[in-house]
Image 1 (cartoon, rainbow, N blue to C red):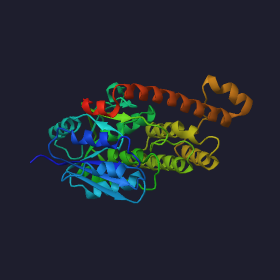
Image 2: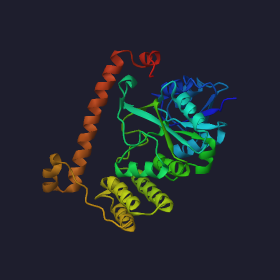
Image 3: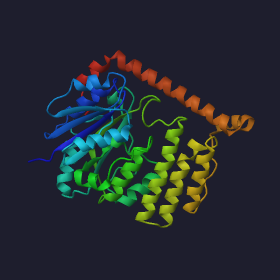
Image 4: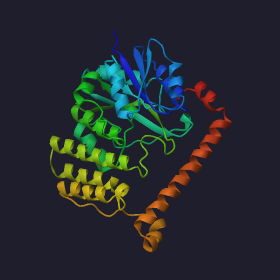
Amino acid sequence: MQPLVSILIPAYNAKRWISDTIRSALAQTWPRKEIIIVDDGSFDQTLAIANQFASPNVLVVTQPNQGASAARNKAFELCQGDYVQWLDADDLLSPDKVAKQMAAAQNCQDERRLLSCSWGYFIYRPDKAKFVPTALWCDLRALEWMLRKWEQNLHMQTATWLVSRELTEATGPWDIRLQGDDDGEYFCRVILASNGVRFVPDAKVYYRITDSGRWSYIGQSNRKLEAHLLSRQLQIRYLLSTEDNGRVRAACLKYLQTAYHNFYPEQVVLVKQSQELAAMVGGKLDIPKLSWKYRWIQRLFGFAVAKRVRQRWNRFKSWVIRSWDAALFHLRGGNQNLRETSVA
């Protein structure tokens, strides 16, 4: 009998996209699958929409709002799969994503081998997704994968991973303290517990870039800022416990530096904690630099004002791009057109 794959979807106020996400899960060509959707106390129509898909192979449950990590833990608690496919409620899988990775898993015959794949980002139109290969798009040893990620400030989207139950259980639950970068901390543990990463290039994930309401958006939320620093502190500890040498410590320092601009200069406590972490790995954080467009503002009004101007300008540009993409999306038929068009 073929292994069972559990596709686990945490959802919170995801009424706009949840139906397309569920359809992409149902469309998987891998025959043995179950889909578990955990509504995390949504106050829109997310639960009602998800319930329309309920069936013997699609379980929909709800719980009081506790955060994405708690919803993912609940989903795993309920699943029976031999492999786990995590899927956020606004992202999409190509129809053969799971099947191609399961073929690679069966060739490896190693329950501790972690499967990843290519991913592209889009806003409204998945057929316009941009797939940009990075140094992580290849087979790598676990430690090498983490070092490349931190050294080059790279990212691997959550849904790209296919994880065996053995590896998932060895990793432990998602950390419910983290209201941001919970996926970074969790998959750091998964990767370091694995026997390496097997990259499957033909499998694809479509990562939707939504507005500032998405889970990964930090903004000025103190809770999310604190979570991001805690996540980095935990991950640095994991890496140093695996191997402690000059390259590892340099990568840790680079990882702290890439997040430093989120805290500096307003978050005095987090700035101090970041500097202390940098000193612990034998380095020092540099004051974040702004591009030439904002330096005159910095000279006249200070770094904090220039940083806020940059943030507002970037939000405006993002709004313009999203609005234009939305207009093109609706001109060609919107959701109905999306349902009729494969994202393969």
